[in-house]
Length: 268
Image (cartoon, rainbow, N blue to C red; front, top):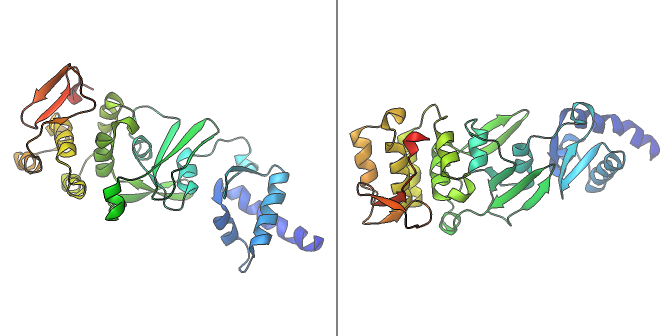
């Protein structure tokens, strides 16, 4: 038994030297075919006792050897491992796309399972449930893409969906000013995809918010009069509100939208 431990230890170490963050299932897949659960658990327990791995939460580990000994793992990769269906979203999606104006220590992701909330290495990981309607009709995984983070491919909301989602749930976007400054970093937006995702949501109020923000700078997004009409067709009677209702709001009749009086997407 001891001899077998000696033979397999280099295999474990080699995996930890090239893998910063991993799940128990991924570790099992890297072992010899047919490795049983007890073998996997024993290997991880030995590595943990030697200080070679750090446990983030049940089933998720971080390597603490080689180049990873003193480094803080990529928080977006950590979030992608916390639940099997993790999708990086809201302000964290802005970070994943490389346009976030400010770095956040809060990491947000979507999951259809039990929401996860935990802190690790100075970061707060917040798992959020999709809207009930999107869960029911299974559209919550619409408009996603994969992006590479080191050796990892992670799921993230697309640029177009990120824009819409952040305007829908402002509390997870970092606030309007942070959001507006970040959106200007997108090199381009596909208006067809924006409208397509709005049709998934079927919310005139969100359509009004998106239209106001995009048409504050139509030249930036290469918008046309035809695009303007497409957004108008997705509005109801309103009125709609951008954020919480306050006494100091101004009304935009084109979009049937009340917005904070001092807020202007074109000046952020």
